[in-house]
Image 1 (cartoon, rainbow, N blue to C red):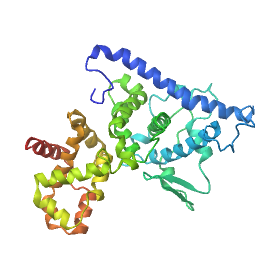
Image 2 (image 1 turned 60 degrees about the horizontal axis):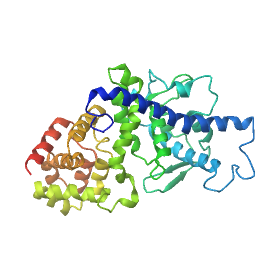
Image 3 (image 1 turned 60 degrees about the vertical axis):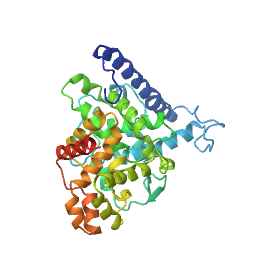
Image 4 (image 1 turned 90 degrees about the vertical axis):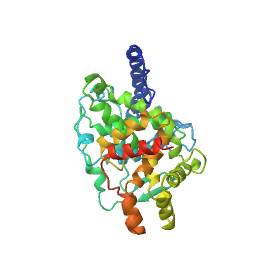
Length: 352
């Protein structure tokens, strides 16, 4: 409801959910299954390789060119989802509701799992970061992150594979932004909430429901992930500065101390704001923070207040500490009681 996926009126839920879940099945067919069938058939039939369109065709509209570009995105997603919340075993476990459309043994097509296996470069690893910079490194040793999550046998799929599919479909439907590192940290808590719901219907349709909630949330925060918008009023730089201007209002002494030490908000608030604090706390605590965040009418103004609350709650340590000590505090936040943080944020909000 808070992410505008469902209307407030409960009687309308059933038809809407049915329609949205069918739409997501259609996305799977169009973006994973059909391209997978075409690729699987290449060994048998060569009609996809023509003079006009072939694997070396540089034309941006070429189906082959699209396929290879998609693989680049898929490899980055795969690398990131494999290390999602390594402190809990949930994402490595098999889902009770594997996607039958994908895992149907009658379907002989190239799944995302097969695509990753076949396109993982043996000699180099390619990673695209938020700035669009492509890092190419030669892994002399196997990267531990790639073996962290074992691929389950055929017929089963792990929760991280479901998350991978959600992100791949999102990237295909939103080519302007595609996939940027960090989106995996946003989709993780949403999927976990649906996939662990006591109601089996929500569990069964966790993939489709997460996709639409994630899409709606990204519509609100996508500007944080677009490098070219960083310095605009909707960009992340403006929001980081807003954390400091709010802190100046609420606690000028602490603000002056951070300024004196040249501790810029970019050093810590970038991650706090972009990932909605999903990397600062344990997953159940992240979900608790998000409940308050999404329930607030001006939800991302409230996020700024939560960030200020986090600073003021460790003000004594920050006022005493030097640059190195304070940076360590801010990059590895010491307070784990999120209720205390939310209470403080509400006090700051009410003191306006």
